[in-house]
Length: 315
Image (cartoon, helix red, strand yellow):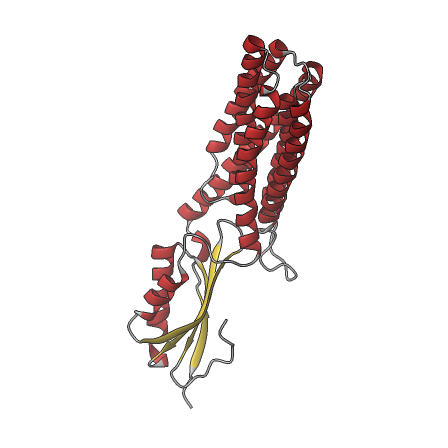
């Protein structure tokens, strides 16, 4: 009796060519270096800003220092996540530890939301009784902070912000700090020239709003990945239509597209062909379409003959 189905997996996944492997490794190294240098910069200045915030009695500086504390932890966690994620796969963790970076991004996002809510509360208390603030010291410290955050942002811009969720969340942390420094400078100038102490908590609130919006996006994206959601840049209907349009294909079902980590899309599906002898040709065309059109290199495709009934329920 002839074979009715064949289960095949793509053999040249994940860019194993010398050029592709070198490029991927280089990108990883750039990301790690960016996180490491940014962590050192942010941690060093966070200590200075915290001391300065208490000395000048500025909520804008104290809140920004608190944000920088979360940044230092976030950057350190992100750096650790990238190193930890490079550990080899095992029989217990068949994809290795790649998803650890998504967990780190999730923690970063939640941390930012909590800190923003705390700043809102502190600002609310200051609106009723605005305290005296040392504007001259405040503007000096905030200006140094602006320079430090610009340097950290520049370093992280060299990383892969578009594809790597961990780098993107770290970059958003630093941008939040940068905005905090700008807000603190503006508030210090208003206090210095107009004696308007309310500018300090107002600046804190405005920066917190921007931070919490970014934090929500990072948290949402990381949850989407953890819930095995399809990548935002891939439309599953388009994938199914293109695979269905391949010559000899009768049907495409049990199609699943998800991401292991932010830059590691995966796909599995069943393809029914009119004759099982056409399976190799169909598989090769499907692999090429998925890699060239959708940038999906990690695929598991089962090719079935017309007589084969799939036992897996449609999801």
